[in-house]
Image 1 (cartoon, rainbow, N blue to C red):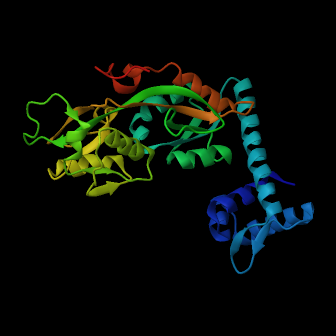
Image 2: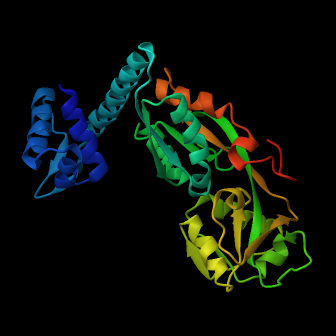
Image 3: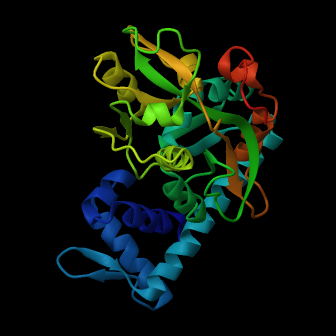
Length: 308
């Protein structure tokens, strides 16, 4: 068995299409197909269901795929460890990040890359469910997600910050004398919110329910940047994390008020599979994460923020 055959198999699982998998591996489609057939011949069992197109894996093929993912992950970890022994950590770190945490990632990746200039980092926007699958399937090395709401299974975690919420509003005199706003009052505003497949949205919906409200947003999006742009039109308000104000270019003509009654906060941080050994690249990123505080992440300590 060759590492290259396992690479073909994992690419096919990701793309669900022979042609796209071949392009991902930078080989011709017949090369990829023949490589998988050679693997089937060597193992003496069918791996892929074929007709005129890819139709999935056989039960035996699914098990081979799980081993292939693990073997490739171990190969990468070995190469990282050898580079670390040479005193110059090299490799690619893959991080799945829930959308609300994406604006903060440059403040994490920068100190990591400064400490390890031979490393590269892939930051991907993923839901918490996608992060769970990615960790389970060795498709990502680390996740950044909520730690105390719908927690990820079979992981260890390193906290980064506590996410609190504010109401982003048009700066049109609305709530001119207010220093905060209740969730009940927010529910009565025309709202633009993240889509319901996002854990952040489920947190927001729970906060509204705790306040006895069930708003119906007129606009839903899976992009946190779109929230500010819609508020800037003057037609909508939105519930956003407080760190949105420190990390995003807030559109002119908007301002934010802390949301209270209740004051909601959820812990966000890195998660990594609880297996051993920990890959050197992931271990190095967690070491950097443990040195960060609110000043590193937000530019200053947040007044009134819930402490971790």
